[in-house]
Structure formats: C-alpha cells, structure tokens
Amino acid sequence: MPVNDTYTDVLIIGGGVVGCAIARELSRYRVRVALVEKELDVGFGTSSRNSGVMHAGFNYKPGSLRAKVDVRGNALMDDLCRDLGLKIKRIGKLTVALDEADVPTLNRLKEQGDANGVPGLEIIPPQTMQKLQKGVEGLMALHSPSSAIISPYALTIALAENAAANGATIRLGREVTEIRRPAAPGESFEVTTVSAEDGRKETFRAKVVVNSAGLFSDAVCRMAGITDYRIYPCRGEYYVLDKRLDGSLSTLVYQAPKPNAPGLGIHLTPTVDGNIIIGPSAEYIDGREDHACTADVMAALRKEGHDLLPSLRMSDFIRNFAGIRAKQTPPEVGGNLDFVIEDRKDVPGFVNLVGIESPGLTSAPAIAEMVRDMVAAHIPLAERDDFNPRSGRSPFFFSELPPDVRADMIAENPNYGEIICRCEQITKQEIIDAIKNPLGAKTLISIKYRARATMGRCQGGFCLPRITRILRDEFGWKPENFLLRSVRSPLYAGHVREDKGGDVR
Image (tube, rainbow, N blue to C red):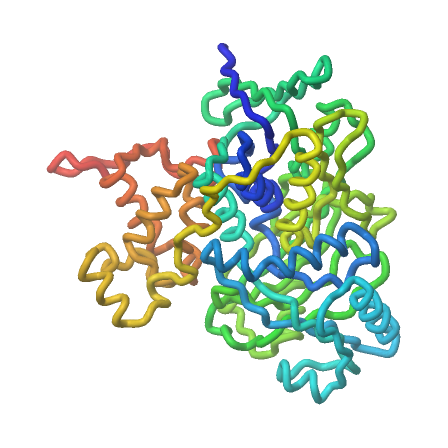
C-alpha cells in the first residue's frame, strides 16, 4: 500500500486536552504544526472521562512539576475560557476533615498550597462550612476559592478547533505505528501512522516530535528507543445524576485524602451544565481502554451518593461512565509520581510527556507553555500577526439565551425553532453545527460532545432517531456511515423495510 509523506516542523502525538493545548499554543507562531490522534475525534480518552474539576494546586509537593503547572494552568483558565467561548464556574472547594486523624492532613495541604502560591486558602470551622454548603459535615475544612469546574470535552474540542482555525493540521483516526529517529543532525523524524478507516499509511517528517499520548505515552517512548517508563492504567468509575438536583451543591466537597491513595477519593461534583457526578473509584486494571463499569463499584457509588446527598432517588441515576488514569506507580506502591515533561537530550527533538494524570486538565495550558519553550530550543519561533485566540462561539446553548434573543434567531433561521433533543432542549441548527464541526469528526459521540444531544434523562431515546434522520436526509449518510465512536462501533447494519414512496426506514 502506498505511503503518503507529510512534512511539518512539529508533530504532536495525541489529541487529548494537553496535546490540543500544545497545538493551539504553537499555532501562535510561524511554524508548521500537525497533530495525530488514533481516535476519530479529539478528547475521546481520559480528557473526556473525568470530573471536569480545575484543581487549585495544594495537593502537590512544593517544587514539583505537578504543583507548578497546576497553579499556573488554573490562573490561565479564565482568559482561555473567555477566548474559546467556554463556561467556567469558580465555585471553590471544601476539603473536609471528618475526624481528628484528618486534621494534620488539612494543615499539611494548606502549607503546601501556600508554598505553591495557591490564592486564598483558609481552614474554616463547621459554621463557615455550612454557609458555603448546607448540610456538609466535619470537624473543619480547607477552603480553596480558586477551585473551579469546566466541561473537559468542550475544552479539548475548543482548543483543537482553534488550533485548526489558526493553521494547525489535525489528523484524526491516525495511529502511530513506528518512529524513526533522525540518522544525523539536521534530519527529521519519520513517524508512520495508519488510518483507522481504510488502513492507509502516512509518514510525517518532523523536526520535533511531542509525545502527548497519555495512556500510550510509554509505548510511544519505546518506538523512539526510550525504555525509562511504564504506564499502569487505573480506572475510575462515575455515576451521572439527573438535572433535577441542579443547585444541590454550591461548592466542591472532598474528603481529606488518605496516604498513598491513587486518587482523591469519591466525591460529588457539580458540572457546568447542571448535572452532578459521583465518583471516581480507583482500581488498577490491565486494559488501557477498558472503560467498563462494574456492578460492585456502581453499588458502592450509589451508597456513597445517598450518604453524601440523602435526597437522592434511584431515578436520579441516569448514566455511568469510566475514565482511566495514566499512572506511573504500580498497584503495590500506589500514590503518585511527578509529571514527566522533558526535552530528551539522548533523542534531540523528542519532547516527552509521561504520566500526565490529574491535574492534567487544569495544567494543560501551562504544560503547553513549557513545551513551547522546549520546541523553541530546536526551531525558531516567530509570533504571527494574524493569530486569532477567539473561537467566536457563545458559551451558552440556545435554550440558555434570553427569550427575545431566541425569538430573533428563530425568525432568522427556523432550524432554531425545532427541538431535536427534548431533554437538553437542543435545536436542529445546533445539531447541524455539530455535524459541520471544523475537525470533520463524524461520530455520534462527536455530535454529543459538541451539542449535548443524547446527554439528557432519556439518553438518546427521543433525539437519536431525529439525529439519524438529519444525517440521512440532509447529509446523505448511509447506514454504514453511522458510528458511535469508532470503526468498531457501527450503529446500523442496514434498512429493515422500504415504504411505498421508495423511502427506506
């Protein structure tokens, strides 16, 4: 099979939130930037399967990379979300001491946070805790006002689409299979990719390669001849609660973390779109893409949810999902190692990111700045005069706009007057805009992450047939075109009947 060659200055491997943030940051400069992602859209891995929390930075050892990029990334988020048209809510966080054994932990976290430069940290008594979140119990809590929530998949998509709008090349459905290091100084890396859709090969020739492959970063290292690292996948399972409970939580509430725990424990997290999430659990697993939800963990999450929010009903649990952390520590060790963000001296031009788990979402824009400076050591970076940091999109869905604005939009475009997703009140035009996304992503999950269709209480029971009809009638899709998330997940095998007018059903 013939191999196409693509020449670029910088090749980023991995379309998670960090890789997309790097692509956007480098698109500010007069360099050729390409990003390859093995899935059919960006953010299909860990970047979309988490709590969506912007961490403040007090959980990490002073002087560590995790602390540095978390605090910096948190500080960058308000301007970034404004430019990209995203919601961010600075609702703060309570880390609660449930008993006397947790009190030293709170004191240690505050000392760490103060050393890291986290603003506004304060240990508060129960009466102050109650003012911030009614019903929360504990001896005391560490309050971090800079903690926030955001949509993780919306951020990842917005970063990628803005990078593409500024000239970056985004190649979806392209898995890296081989990396050839430069044979001599001044020569390029040769990175071979294979298309998930048709098996065609494409070789990228790049002066700098950035390994941002997340759970597969150690595999990419080995392709480049680096054997220093191993990733241990650790799965966290979640429940999603109905929007009936919107407003039940006014701040983030976490229990004080336990020593050597692989995560920060199970908690309730409000989302920017009105749902509440329960989780995550933490379980080391063998498969790096095993996103199964298990009966035992789901039962434990339901119990935990009832304990934390007694008003919960069984009917409030509308969906579950799982995400996987890219941990560098094996199960028998637990805990966490620092992020690896390095410009390899033994492989010049190979910028290596390994073990970027939590707080990777918060840290993404700060990591992008670090990588930019590493790239600049190999390629001159001249700023572009025409870089546009703004996406031009509104952070609000149509249903969230004022009535007079909605009326004007319907008068101008009747598609805004037709509801496709009843639960989330998503209109036909919003579905069409999601289908016509700048990256060309064409899976149902791609539409879901852009328009929130199928995310409501009925989980697609009402809107999926209507989305199917739009794709068939207005975009000419055939049954084999309909994919849930990959070429391995077709939605339809064909038609079941043909009506008298020749239309297929």
